Amino acid sequence: MTEAAATILRPKTAEALARIVAQGRRLEVIGGGTKRGIGRVAGAQSVLSTSALNRVIDYAPEELVLTAQAGVRLADLEVLVAAQGQMLPFEPPHLTRLLRTKGQPTLGGVLAANLSGPRRIRAGAARDHFLGAEAVTGRGEIVKSGGRVVKNVTGYDLCKLLAGSWGTLGVLTQVSLKVLPAARAELTLLYFGLSDAQAGQAMTQALNAPVDVSAAAHVPATTAARAPLKAAMAVTALRLEGFAASVAARAEHLAAALNGLGRCEQLDAGHSRDFWVQIREVEAFSKDPRPLWRISVPPAVGWRVGATIPGDVLYDWGGGLVWLLSDADPAQVRGVVRTLGGHATCYRGDAPAFAPLDGSLAALSARVKAAFDPKGVLNPGRMGAI
Image (tube, rainbow, N blue to C red; front, top):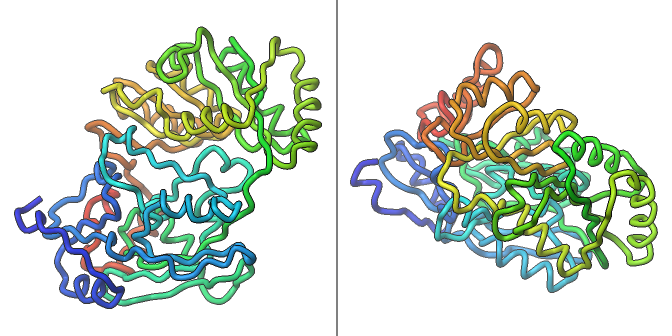
C-alpha cells in the first residue's frame, strides 16, 4: 500500500462517502479493520473506513427490527438488544483474538463477510436476517434495497448480493436486520471420546431428531487438549434452547436417542454459553502460528477433512464448518475440499484467501463487478479477479 493510504478517511454521512468513492481513487474499505488480513487489497491509494457511521437509527423491539449505520460496533449492538431480552439470531463471531487484531468488528463488516456463528444450523446465515441496505457502489452512487419489514418483496434482493462480497461491490452505509427473542433457557449435552466419523454421524442424527438442536460441534482430542478447554479426550457438543420445560424434555429425548454413544454430561446455561463462545471464536486456535483455513462442506462429509489433510481441526455447524490448522500445500487443501463439494478460505497464512473462480461462475462474477464497480475502485484484488 502506498503512503497515501496511511490516511484513513472517515466520512460521517453516506453522501460524503459517495463523494469520496466518486473521485475514482482505489480504496481499501474497512469497518473496524479486524478482517483486513483476509484477502490482500492490491494497489489501494486510500483507506476508507465506515467507523464514523456509528448511529443506531431505529430499534423497535416489539417489531423485532433494528436499523443502524454500518459502522456501529457489533459489541454495542449485542448489549443493546440483550437489554430488551433479544439477540442477533445468527450469533456473529468477532474473531479478534483468532485474527490477532485490536479493533472492534462492526455490523457492516460482519454482514459484508456474511459471518455466522454456531446457531446458523437453526436460525440461518447472516444474510438471511438482512432486511434492507443502503450502500455506495463503486460508481459513487447511493443505492437502497429492501426495507424494514420481514416480508418485503420489492425489487431485486441486493442485500443477498452484498452479503459475502467483502466490500468489493459496494460500501454498506446503513442496514436493517431482524432480531429475535433470546432463549429463556439453554443447556448443552456433551459426549466424550468419539472419533471424527462417529461424531459426524451423531451430530447428523441429532440434527435430524425432532428436538430442534441449535448448535452442534465436535472438538477432536488434539484440539480439545488445548486451552481453554483442556479436555482429556474428544468432546462432541449439542445445544438445546427455548423455554425451560421444553429444553428439559428435549434433552431427555435426545439423550435417549443417543444412548449408545456412552457417558453423557450436561452443561448448565452459564457454562453452556461460555463453551459456545469458545467454539464461535475458535479460541483453541488463536495462538497457533500455522496457516488457518475456514472450510465449508456438506455436514455429512465434514469429518473427511480431518481424515485427509494433516493438521488440527474443529468442527461446527454439525460438521458443515471446519476450522483447519495445517501446513499442507494450499492446492492440496483446496483440492480435497473441492472433491467434497465445498470451498475453503484462508484466514491466516500466505495462500490467497479466496479460491480463484473459473468458467461460467468467473464470467458471472466479472459481469456483476463491472456493473457495480467498473473501475475497480473498491477493495481491488481482495477476492482475486473481482
